[in-house]
Image (cartoon, rainbow, N blue to C red; front, side, top):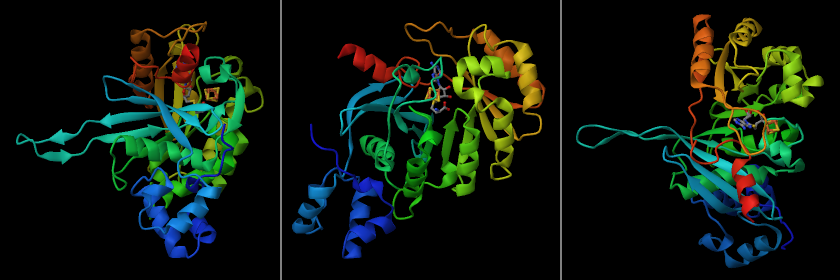
Length: 358
Ligand code: SAH
Ligand code: SF4
């Protein structure tokens, strides 16, 4: 196995300009990385060969490679990547809106996409319903490995650098457990001469490390947060998410209230619905109360079963009744349509499948 090298995707443009001289070359290389999606140094045709050779001694351009792809009927594409050390992580390409054409087949609006990225190999949080947790924790992803997931998906889907895209940190791992690399990746995405993905287009999903929610807030990156709440009382939440013992529901709600958000926006609360665990209207009632003084939006998610789990997928009518209760009591609520249900859509499921086949 090759010894892993840092990637050029690990750096902001300013950092790259400090590493590579003369600095106009660094700017050109930045363009190759984010506008042309270069995969290796040989692609960078206007960069002198000597500089390319020098850089290739120390760095790689693309630190990850696609080793598996599953395409769903609804346009969702799930990717499995291999990292330089042979570990694997997933990312998902989600089609949020179809393109619009008029009667003459002229394009009115382009399709809209969201990319779901991973932040760690495995996860320390250990949620009992989550397949990623089963394999334990291996390591944090570098900023470059996080950035590379988006670059590779955009390249693979011929998505031009200046087309808008949303990023959700909802793949494998707990983003706030890898806060420094996450924050660095967020800044690299925001680069005006790079992909220019503003904070508003990036959503960090967390299982609720309340002290780290405060830290992320203090960084003032302008990102949204989504809280994986999943339960309305601490007993059940601790069963589902063991670290709830240290960061209970109340501490999360208080941290959310302190988080700097655009006053026109809402904080998203994810509620994974598991049959006979948290799918009753009593829970819905408690949820309304819990979120009463927050500008919140609830996203109900069907539990997606996998072999060996004791949890079950809820019934559709119970999901709808739950949603109707919330809406009737003034809470904005959507049911996450099961994007990619025919592929292994939930976090960790493609990796598990592939390892099972190896
Ligand atoms: N660690 C972060 C982000 C990654 S998990 C977090 O927990 O928020 C991303 C989402 O996948 C979480 O909302 C989690 O609840 C959900 N998830 C995990 N296992 C799932 C399963 N089997 N079915 C449906 N959603 C699942
Ligand atoms: Fe980690 Fe999120 Fe899975 Fe929990 S749901 S184990 S926090 S990845």
